[in-house]
Length: 229
Length: 229
DNA sequence: CGCCGCTTGTGCATGCGTTCTCAAAGTCTT
DNA sequence: AAGACTTTGAGAACGCATGCACAAGCGGCG
Image: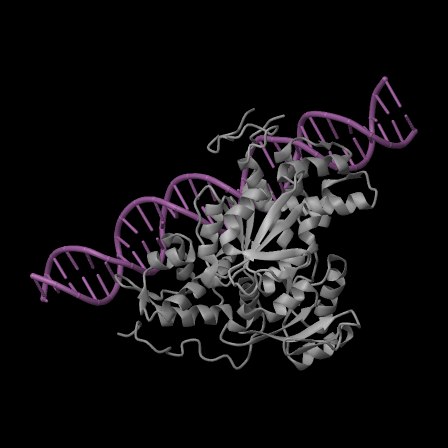
C-alpha cells in the first residue's frame, strides 16, 4: 500500500463529489460503477474520474468498473471521513445559526460541538441543542472536545481576530465565511467560502450575456485624472 | 475600446477580491495603491495582480500605482456591478433564511426581491421584509421583477427540479447551495457552493497532519518527486 | 532639463491540470 | 478454451495559470 502518494489539489477537491455520487449509488444497491457513470453523477468527464481515482490506487477492475462499497471505503479513508471531526462555529448570527442547524455537516461526520459568540447577550442562549458559549472559553472548548476544525461565521471586522484565537486555541483547520481575507500560519489549513463573491462572478458572465442596450459609453471620463495628457 | 476582451476565468474569480480590497482602501481615503499593496490586501502576489489588471486595460501609472477610484470604477463595470441585480431565493429553510437576511448581498447590488418555497405552510410567512411566495409563481415573479439570477437553497432532492423551473422562468444565472450536482443548459451560468465539501477538503489535509496512531507515517515528504516506476 | 528611482506591463519559462488515446487486463460468450 | 468485448490505467500532448525578470514609462529632484 503505497502511502504518502501526492494527490493533486484539484483531485482532492473532487473526491467529495465522487464520494457523494457513490453514496447515492450504494443507496440504490448497485454493486459496481464505471468511470463513465460516475463521471455523469459527479458532473465531470470520465477521463478525469479515472485519473483522479488512479491517484488513490488501482482500485478498479478492467472490463467491469469500480466496486462501489470498496471505493467508498477508500475515498472516505483518504478524506479522513472514517473518523468524526468535532467542529466549533464562531459567530452565531444569521449564517452561524444556519450552519449550526445544517444537517449536511453531521451526515458527513462533522459534528458541531461548540457555538461561540463574542456578544454577551448571545452567550447562554440555545441554538438547536447547543448553548452558545463565550469567546474567551475557546481554548478550553477546543481542548476539552478535541476540536481540530473551526468555522468563522463572524462579520468581516472580527474575522482575523477570531481566526487568530482559533489558532491560538489549537485549531489547525479553518473554514472562513467572513467576507475578508484572513491569514494564518502556514501549518494551518484555510479555506474560504464567500457568498457575495460567487454572485459577483455570476454577475460578470451575466453581464456579458445581456447586451443591455442603453449601455453608457464605456469611457465615461470617470472622475479623477490618471489618464490625461 | 477593445471590447470582448477575453478575461481568464481565474482572473474573473479574483476581481471581486480586488474590488473588496479597493473599497477598503477608498474608505481610508487613500488615493492610489501599488500592485504590491493590493496584493497584500487581496491575499495574492503582486505579479498576479498586475497580470489580472492588465486584462482589463492599462489602468495603472508606472512609478505611481493605480488610482483607487478609477480602478474601482473599471472593475465594477467589468463585473457588472454598476447596475443592480435582483435575485430570487428558492428554498426558505435554514440556509435560505440566512441568505435572505445576509447583508453582504445588498451591499454589492444584489437585492433579494423574491423568496419562494414549495411548502404551502411557508408561503405567506414573512422573512425580513419579504413575503414567501409559491413555487408556481416563479415565472411571474421572474418576469415582473426582471430577475436574472436565482439562488437554489433547497434540499438536494429538490434542487434539479427547482433549477429547471428557474431556467424555464427565464433566469440565466444560478447559484446552487444544494449538495448535489445540477445540470443546466449551456447558455445558463451555474456556480455552486457546497458547505460540506469544503469541510471534507479540510478534513483531507487535516488527516494528513494528525498522525492518528494507526495511520500512515506522519511526515509525507512534501517535496517528493514521486514518480516511481 | 536631464537623471534617478519607482512601479507597471508583459514576454517567457515553468508547472499543473485536463483531455486524448490506446495497450493491458479483466469478464463474458460461445 | 479461445476470441470478442468492455473498461481501466497511464503515457503524451496540449492548454491554462502562475511567477519571474526586466524593459518601458512616469514622476520627482537636483
